Image 1 (cartoon, rainbow, N blue to C red):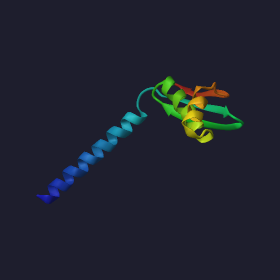
Image 2: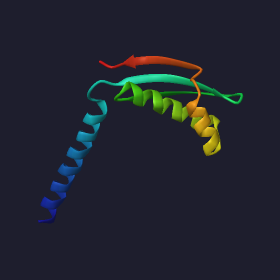
Image 3: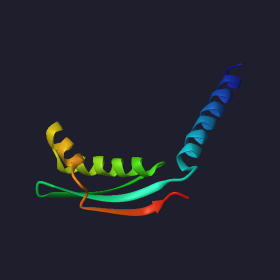
Image 4: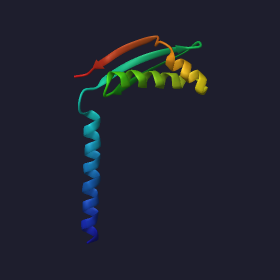
Length: 92
C-alpha cells in the first residue's frame, strides 16, 4: 500500500513540474534589455515575460531596484524614462 502511494505522489509531482515548465516556455514571449539612469547611477536588466508591457515593467523595476534605495527613490526611478530599451525578442 505504501509503495503505491509513493508512486502516485511521484507521478503527481512530476506531472505538476512538467505543467509548470510547459507554462513557462509555451506561447509568445517578449525579451527586453532596459538601462536606467537615476541620480548618477546606472543599471541594465534583461527580462522575459508573456506580454510586452510585463517585460518592460519588469526590466525597469529590476534595474531601479539596483540603483535606488527607499520607496521614494524607487518610485521616482520607475517613473523616469529609460536611458535605453533594446527588444531582444518580440513575440512569436
